[in-house]
Length: 296
Ligand SMILES: Nc1nc2c(ncn2[C@@H]2O[C@H](COP(=O)(O)OP(=O)(O)OP(=O)(O)O)[C@@H](O)[C@H]2O)c(=O)[nH]1
Ligand SMILES: [Mg+2]
Ligand SMILES: [Zn+2]
Image 1 (spheres, rainbow, N blue to C red):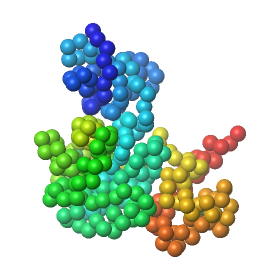
Image 2 (tube, rainbow, N blue to C red):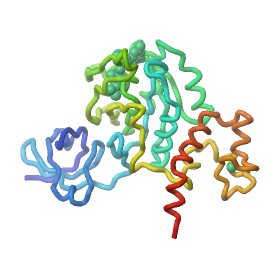
Image 3 (cartoon, rainbow, N blue to C red):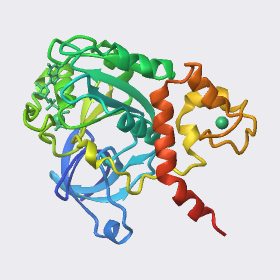
């Protein structure tokens, strides 16, 4: 029996595959995690006790951050992937995912895939105007993939996005020997078929990329990932330079407020309107909750 330190590269039905000292060990988690309501996730740095190729995860090392959906830890960059068509981007979902990334101090980057079958310019532009990195690509035609090489360099990155947007296809284009399973989206429903079933890390350029199971748009409820109204404006960083000049700056919620400079910036075209609309919708969703929490 020896103790090693490693990283969880995959977790499937109760088993954790831990890469440590150049080997991969199939591990179970120590029972105590369940009692502590703590479960190891892909991306976790862990201590394991092993003999031969099997072992036990005995300790989760401190996390930089952790996402509930997809379950992945210690992420530097979150690639928020959507396809320009089939399925079409749902900007509210993208804005929610990026807000959750920012709240965890993870850098969100917007990727518009399948540029071979639709026009990505409008979408790419919204997020560039909002100050984010944003680009389009095609896994099919192998175009626009260069930014991944620069960005992934020594970082841990994760792909997220609806089922069928082409996350696994992009990974296959970047690392052809992976041959990950991909599937046509359903013609009838116009959605993906939930092909990828677990979160897995693949080594790339000194870092890792995580492929994750896509979700359906309906399923973007955010249990356990609520952003309260106080924090919400910070999750829309493009508001900051304007928020400073709101008439009642400290207390301005930027929602139907007289003298709000953020609203003015939206009207002047300085902040993309879709971003502001997502902000208001997220604000309305959590408004009651924040008040309840603030009660003495
Ligand atoms: N035209 C075109 N089709 C693409 C492109 N990338 C992926 N596809 C197709 O889109 C479908 C879904 O691709 P996947 O890679 O399985 O999507 P995914 O995001 O991994 O889906 P889940 O694993 O279910 O989350 C497949 O039929 C792919 O061939 C692209 O750049 N252009
Ligand atoms: Mg997939
Ligand atoms: Zn304001």
